[in-house]
Amino acid sequence: MKQLLLGVAQEIITPKIGGNLYGYAPDVYSESVHDDLTLTVFAFTCGDLKAMMISACVGSIGTDVSDSLRQELGKMFEMDANNIIISATHTHSGPNLNTDNNSGWGQFDQQYFDSIFHPALLKTAKNAFSHSEPVRLAIATGESKVGINRRELLIENNLSCLGQNPQGCFNPKMILLSFQNLSGKVTGNMIVYGCHGTCAGRNHEITRDWSGIMVDALTEHTGGITAFFNGPEGDVGPRLSNGKTTGDITYVEELGAIAANDVLRIYQTISEFKDATVSTSYRALKLPLLPRIPYETAVELYEKSDKNSYNITKFISEYYRKVKESYEQGYEEQPYMELPQSIIRIGSVAFVAFPYELFSEIGMRIDRAVPDLQVLSLAISNGKGGYFPTQDQLCRGGYEINYFKHKQIQCHPDDADYQLIKETLANLETLARE
Image 1 (cartoon, helix red, strand yellow):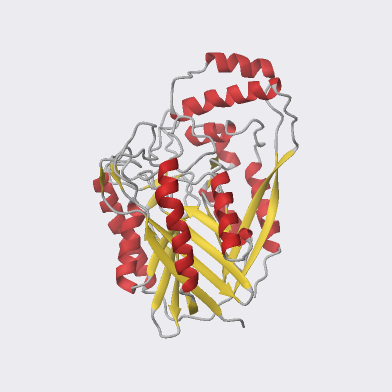
Image 2: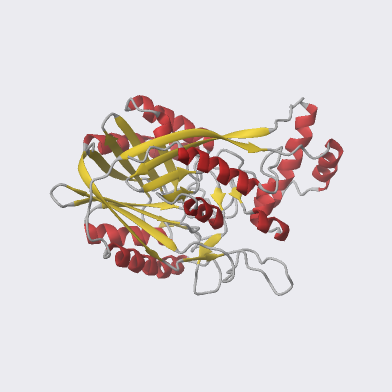
């Protein structure tokens, strides 16, 4: 078996006070720092193969930005850019690096990217590779009730605006990967769990949200650099004691303490660190598309839409405008879109990058279909493509469904979740196990 080498490095990427926060509206600006944002790089080498996993405590990173960064890192370290996964933790109390369609959520923070984020990424990646050393891996799994389905169905059979739905689907599984060098020292930890970073809501404090307190607790306990990777969280919000999925900064501390206890309990179940290998796979998934809505319909609905709004209302208005202009500019409809997908296997765990905010059931269905690996679907990774719901939720509508149905000129069919799962499983079949 080839020896696995790992280098882990971390940098603070906290923006200056006064910048726009990801939030729910375009006019939310920071006034203080509750806890520093971080960027963490795990640099793997296994024989001739190099792979990199990056966790960034920001709201999201646009697909074009992520692609450019991965190409830059690939050239810098003479490695395949497809072997790099850049994940946003999706804190709503951090800066916005999404360029894919920001209608109503604020604009890409270019100054922050140029002066803080980009330099920190390059520095951290260099430090990680330069400190690579032989490691062994331990994997521990447990349950956490930090998250809850947030598509609250009211007695009137309509959805509330992002509440708590105890009857709804959500994955309680929390997974920990811990790496130990040959001297027995823990060098790094990766925590994977699917839940929005919205404890604080429209607060004005910069924070990693609930996951930050959890990460700090495990770092202090083990001495190893720790990072959080968000799993399918499209329909999962934090289980706050106020009965909602948003609150203020006190809920960050309250839920963060619960998450910290959960991950420390899970860490205590580790009995042995073992040798592991790494392999990667890359494939362009083909996802079918529907024809556009008629031109006359797009024109009519755009004229009726609220063009001065923000968030999802503005997003839908912009959708009608883009469809209208696509007819006027000679756009040719396509039968499907191609979605680049990177997979990195570490030991018996396969990390699958999705740019989407997947509904939790999608990740569970993929994992269940692959008996010889624990498949961890990562949300908001290698880009930002909006919500990706399950077919059964389309009839109920709501915030996430509105986004899904209006995020591109040609929409996906109702069974898009099945198509995404089927294509992902085909990619996983090509992944070398050892």
